[in-house]
Length: 365
Image: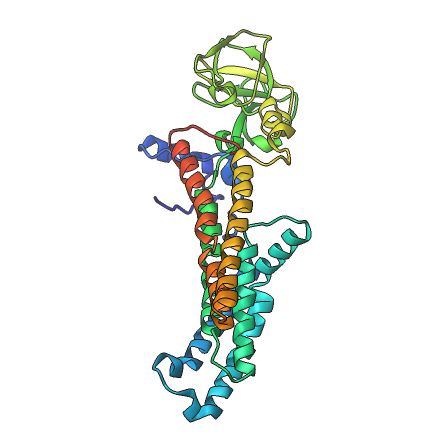
């Protein structure tokens, strides 16, 4: 990949492209490069959430260092209490701000009587924080706030990875990626000008040479056209068109140079309207999404059942309330759906990227 800079007052982009093409390095410039802005990888809110929990996670681990080396908190109860309170102060904004999305998602699901995949995760987060706060305030233990902050940090980091992976691997092309940046417009009997395709209007007469793309719908005025509509219809055989017949945007002229009188703008062409048809943008979820929703509902119910059974076993049969809480919390956390959440975008993104390399474009999955 090479990056070039040029002075538009001394030379034009067209001349530069022609020069590069003459030495065997023809640039690929299309309308998508002009119109499509590079998407942001993730939001500022997610960055703040990761920054907050990362700061809290690191400091809580420092405050928990005596626990890691096996020091007896009873010999230094004053310091143990201070470190516990400081850890609780750091963990509270993590629960309120950094973990908010998971808690809100779970609450919305429960409010609508729908067990989404965030319910067991939210229960695990709340129980981990509540158990730790109770131990610290009652001086009965050091709690697990380091594990709490670490869990939220890893969840948000996985969320960032999911978003960035999906943005990088998702379908990056649309019809604009197939269209040229400019077209040759006849302004007189022999005079030709290069005009950006977005400025083409009905009535303009454009010249389409061999292997060039028709940017907008129109009527053939001159020449014998053999147009490849494979990008529009999927048909691989070129279609013969004679003077006076209609031609459509997205077709590639495979024969001689032709003149076309435009009847529509680029944004109103048949291909653009087909691409933006409501049938492709309906609110109905795809099969993969519906399958994931159904699986997630059963998965959540199963996890809640297993966690509840473990809690009842240790509480009723063994009489150990602390072990019951630990068992239920462990099941909720171990059942974290991060891997499931990453699997779908990563798999579909790779499939779309592979298909795109073979010029097989998919609009919706």
